[in-house]
Image (tube, rainbow, N blue to C red; front, side, top):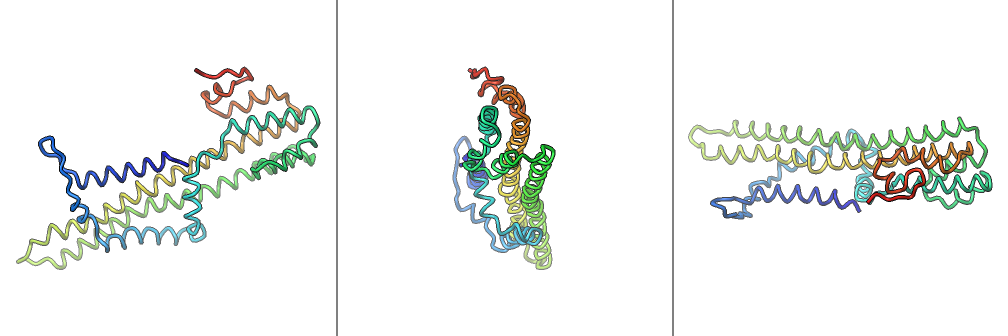
Length: 273
């Protein structure tokens, strides 16, 4: 599970609530839970939260129904580990070098990653190398485009939330000024605070909910695309009959130096202490 995402969101919520209810005076912290009541307004919730969600649905009607799926992906532990794919490709290279490409079909049938399986079967079927690369790279491009559309949906929500917060504030100010009486100024402060609550809701919705989701989904996309690029390079090298030792060195150039050291770059098998 993606624990750090949950920790970050919960800490943001905690510090926000703590800032609302806590008062420090003379080194003493006083907690006033009744302050939370000042930050609840049903009309503001309808305008900001419901309005933002409605705009997201209107802009991305086909994707909006996949909210639960996106959240599940968000909470999932890291599913794409580049070094794991490198090791699998080295194993395939050794099998192909010893027994030929046809021997890889059995490995393909046990491969849970559909893209990896497709890549293996393309070279097992003796397709032209340029054709294989074209098919796989096009698959990567289309996958990334679909992922970016999902990210764009949450970025749209992040942009819409503060806008609806401002709309709610304007509505509150207009109503306040319309009802303002020269003989009764006591309601001016409370009415102003209610008007500003929608701006508060919009900022929280944008920066605590939508922005972290978009950032985490972008990171997931980058992880998957990197692993797919490693698969393409590895598969093409296997088809060309490249030495597994040199293939390892080439594929490890896709990962950062720490991962290279941990996995023994160049087949040295040494771990960084």
